[in-house]
Length: 81
Image (cartoon, rainbow, N blue to C red):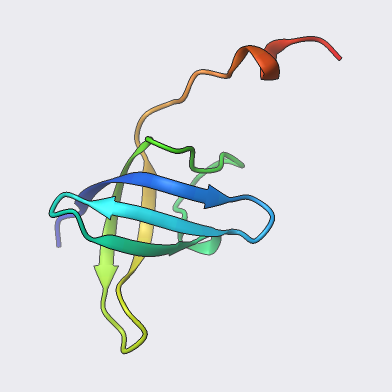
């Protein structure tokens, strides 16, 4: 089954969930444990993602999320502390 494409709308690192906007404009729930081989990376707003969708009674959610684009660190992240 081919994966669908979407964009990360937002992701809360502390609560470990967020939403992806699918190609048709639908908002889809994402849990951190749905990330496939993320190597410790977390989704960033606007990041491209590939995923499988599922549609339980609560509403759509994603599975097997692959983060496609590597986001550049912001200047705040690259400053020495």
